[in-house]
Length: 79
Image (tube, rainbow, N blue to C red):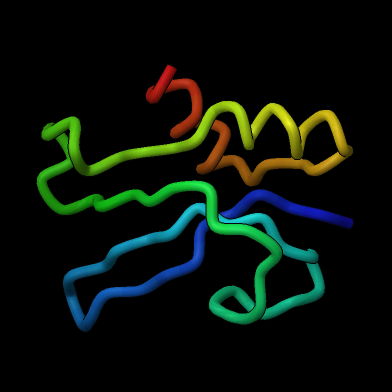
């Protein structure tokens, strides 16, 4: 099953997440199919801390991918 979820990056106590499309069996920070955005929860009020390619999200949803709960919330915020 293909999922749209967050992959953690950054360093200790300063997380940074990439929004990725991946197989659900892969590790959280492991291999992915496509990187479609990013999310920086530090100083989240700034608009430059969230970017998601809506066209690619729609493409993957049409192909049958399912977003995680957090990614679904971020998509709604970004639109």
